[in-house]
Length: 115
Length: 113
Image (cartoon, rainbow over all chains, first blue to last red; front, side, top):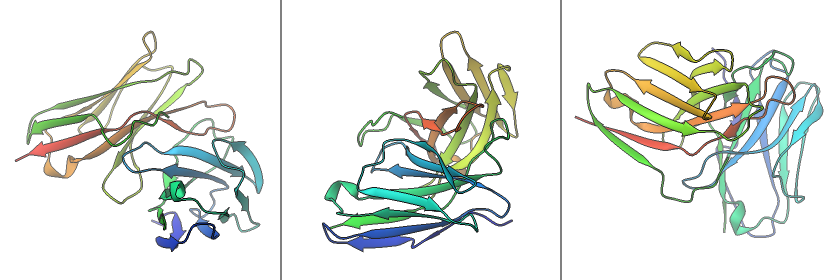
């Protein structure tokens, strides 16, 4: 079965650089979520999209932005990177925002290292 | 979710024994709960879920118990196997609305041979 695809899997950047993370949801999933997981920590919700519109926003820094495109893939853009941005970034997708609660399927994550 | 730093609670059990992992949640409005398993370097993997109108749900070798009175969730794993070694997270969300997941503190489960 198709799963959530994230690219790149690993990314190394210098401080103050920019990074773009991509997420391709499971086919026919129209809702995408982004989470950040620091070392030894639980995943923290950043932002979500439903039908290409932002549906919720969590603890996402102003330096970060995201969008969902017409093919439902999503990109997380991170600027002015800081050392503390080093983390695993997960994308998850679900069939529909209105499906009355449901499993979110997680991708393998992108490991971002800021030097 | 709460940041708990690098020191996850740990649980070690013998292979074949049963294990119970506990989780407390804080949002009274949460009405959907999920247990995820996360292996090193991988994304969270769905184990089992339960809605707030239930207090128990069983899957294959796993059972989730929900106590809404004390906002407590537990995951029971029967006859543990080496492949069960991982970090386990509970997560909560609201069925209505944006349905973002709020993760609880993870527990590292180690199965000893």
